Image (cartoon, rainbow, N blue to C red; front, side, top):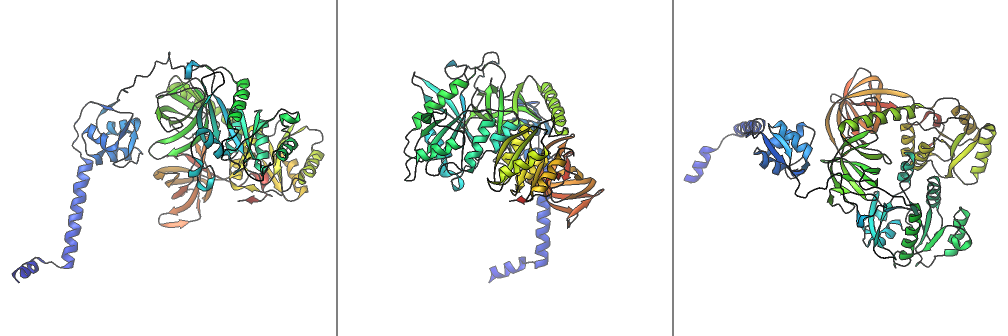
Length: 617
C-alpha cells in the first residue's frame, strides 16, 4: 500500500506529461543540432583518404562525429547513410568542408607507367573480336550465351527476357594452341545496335543471328538482318532449338534465302550452324566460324596508346553517379584517366570488368563499367582518354558546336531523299512506294529500312544515322519512338490515308522540321533527386509548363529529358504554370540528373509532320 501511495504522489496529469515530453524532445533536438553543427574537429592539415571509403570509416579517419560527415556530404549533393560507401571525390569534398586538406591514399598495387602499359593477353596486338547476338525474342539468344559462358544468367532474368545490355568476354581455345578472347554483346532488342550506328560507331565485327529452327524467320529476325546490312557487318546464322520436335533446318534455310541470306550449301555465302544450346551441340563449330569471320575483319590495335571506346549503355546510380558500360576499341583505360564522351567528361574513379571485379586497366576488346563522367553519355558515343581536364573541356565545347550544327540543319538534304517505310501489312509497302515515287519522280529515293508494324525506337535511331524521312501507313508510332523523334527533330509522317501521306511528304520536302516550343522554365533549386525521380523548384520564363515529357537544356545544349509528373504552387496542385510563376514540380524518368540553372523546354508531343498519325502503346 505504501508503494502504491508513493507511485501516486509522482503521478502527473496527461497535460503535464505531454508538455514535459515535448520539452524533452526539444532539448534532445537542440543537443543533437549542436552536436552536428559544432562538431569537435581535430584540425589535421593533411589526411589520406582511400579511393573508396565507408561513411563510418571516413568519420574515424577525420575523428569527427559521423553525423557531421553525413551532413557535409548532404550539403554537397551526396545522400549517404552510415553503412554506405562513397568515392574519393565526394569524401574529399566533405573532408575539406570540415577543415581538412585531403589527399588520395596511394594504392598498394603499383600501376604500370603510361609509357609501358601491359600489352594484354599473351602480348597480342590484335583486338578481341566483338560479336553482337541478335534475333527474335525467345529464340534463345541468352541461352546460347549461357552455354558459351557456362553460366545460368537466363534463369535469373524476369520472364525469361534479357532486361539489360550485357557484354561478356570469354576465352576460346584455338586449333593452333592457346586461347583467343571473344567479346559477346547481348542486346534486349535492336535499339542499341541502331543507336550505335546513329553515332557512326560500328563496333561489331560479327553478328550472330539467332533463329529458332522450329519457328523460322520472324519480324525481329528481319529487323536484325536489315540492321546488320546497314552496318555492313557479316552475319552468321545460329539455327537454335535443333533438339525440338518441330525443328526444320531446310525450311529455315529456304526462309533465310528469301531474305537475301543464301546458305553456303545452297551456293550462297551465309554460314548456317545448327545448334542446341540445351544439349551443347554445334557450339564448337559456331565458335570456329566466329573466329574465322572475325579474323578476316580484324585490325591491329596499339594497347600502349590512350584509350578509345564506345558507350554501350549508361545509367545513373545513387551514390556512384553516372555509370557507362564501354567496349574498348583501341588503346587502354586506367583508373584516374581523364576522358571525354561527346558532351560529357570526367576522371575515371573506378572500373569494373564483366564479372563485377574492380580493375585498374582495360585493354582492347574488353567490356568495362566506368564511373566518373560528369553527365550520362548516350549509347554509341565515343569515349576517349585525353591529357588533362583542359583538353577535355575543349573537346566537349567542340562536340557541342558540332551537335548544334547537326541539329540546326534540315534532315532531308541535297537532291536525293532517304526514307524509312513502315506499314500495317507487307502488301501495303509496294503501293506506298508507288505513291511516293509519283511525287518524287525527279529525285532519287533510297529506302534504308522497310517493314511491318509500328514505327519503333529502332527505326528512329536508323533515321538519325541516315538522315531519313520516316513514313508510316496505318502503322502508328510507339510513344518512346515519338519522344525520340521529337528529341532529335526527326520527321515522322503517319496516316491511314494514302493521300495524306502524299501531301505530308510534299510538305516535308519544303517546310523545315521541328516541334513547336510551348514553354520554358529554369530550374532554381533541386530539393530531392534519386533514381531518376525528385522534386525541383522552377521559374517559368516563357509560355506554359505542364505535365508530360520535357527536354533538358544545359548551357544552351540539349542533354536529356524528364517527365513532369506533378505541378504545385504552394500547397495547391495545378495542371499548368504560366510565365512569371515560380513553382515546385515532381519529376520522373529523368535520363540525366538535373542541375540548378538547367532549362526545361516543353514541346509538342509529336513531331509536327506526324500530327495526322496515331501513337500506340
